[in-house]
Amino acid sequence: MPQRIVAGNWKMNGSRALLAAYFTAMEQGWAAPRRCEVLLFPPALLLSESIERAAALGIRLGVQTVHPEASGAYTGELAAEMAADAGAQWTLVGHSERRAACGESNDGVAARAVAALRAGLKPMVCVGEVLADRRAGRAEDVVREQLEAVLTTMGEDLCAGAIAYEPVWAIGTGETASPEVAQAMHAVIRDILGAASKRLLEVPIVYGGSVKPDNAAALFAETDIDGALVGGASLDAAAFLAIIAAMENHGNP
Ligand code: 13P
Image (cartoon, rainbow, N blue to C red; front, side, top):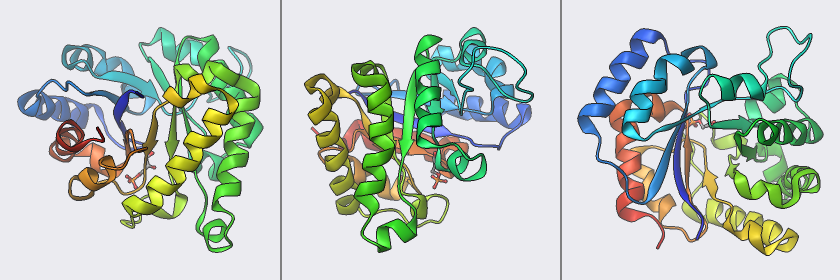
């Protein structure tokens, strides 16, 4: 059975002050999860500040992207090795905001996932279609192409990581994919993984896109939704705790 995961992606939000208050609120409301792993992807500059308090709660930390190379003349970039050295255990790769704003191609995303494994980080590979693809009936094809680029490069090594299905039209818009729509794509993703290797059936597939306390339980009840990658709501400790509780209490069997 795939590991359940509830992950928070802070994107380019937060400060040292917000982080301190956040961990205080998390500590006060924390009930150690029994079913799911909790991950937090703060901005890289807040990583070292997060280590001790995250570790005390059993929260694992990650960065939001890594560069394919281990070092070199890449101003402003972050190597997977550096993230691991700073205490990260995970990294996002291929978030749609980076695909769109930084021109990360399917092959570039695969190279980043390989770099993550090289450095001992677990990659959470983000896939998802834009609204125009969905309207044109191309959603599955787009997600398949994104996944296959990673599978071709990584094969069963992807067992170390996770997939996040984030339909771009549902990110930051308040428009969540309905549990049925999300489940349908998660089932397609599971099939693609299983066709590549039976071992890949164990890769967690989490959903992202306007996940909130009031819609999390319905999403988590779906067979192939193994958790969530939460953006905006993960910045609010009470909301993030409520989403973790929804997974603990209502996650798929
Ligand atoms: P929101 O939860 O703010 O829609 O963001 C989702 C996301 O992009 C997480 O990576």
